[in-house]
Image 1 (cartoon, rainbow, N blue to C red):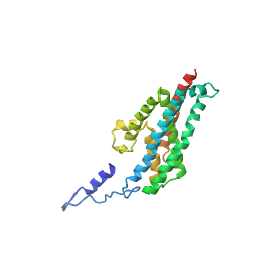
Image 2 (cartoon, one colour):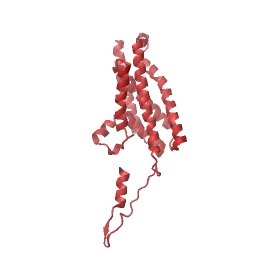
Image 3 (cartoon, helix red, strand yellow):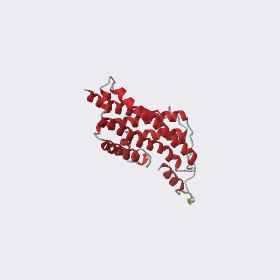
Length: 236
């Protein structure tokens, strides 16, 4: 949107002593981070977040509900394991799966579309790890609400659409209504897209992108806190 407005301004004629001249002088549109305007440079980093959102939330929610349906969760609750240990023990294996997915998407993006990585690979994986935990926390919370695997799947899909539409993956964040922007700030995918695009395309570091990282941290604490409190109620 900003680039389109700048291009229109650059082409707008001006009036001087000699009459209407060609265009505004001194206005030039420069694409610093995507000079060729390749769609893959924005799409591939976004796909990392979208794929993690779809798989992590869905896998976690369904897996925990399945454990409860089979009676395994009640057996674990009967052991001297705290709700926090029980929750973390169930979600930690999915962290490794999420990191493998990140590696696969980044590798294919580099090999097939030549998507650059201008920032630190270690910081990118750290940002991805925080986002994976945030997605898993959302899945754990949904599992405490669902009574069947089908309900868990429906709830998970219900969270996908707002994140994909409002996060900036499909539509520019700046072009959305203010109310939609406020809603987008609640969604973890919004902050992860800022992190991964900033690291990959602009070469930014986490000290510059700390507000998005902090927002994901708050989301994790809130979701896991609510989920663990609901598990504790079952213990009581």
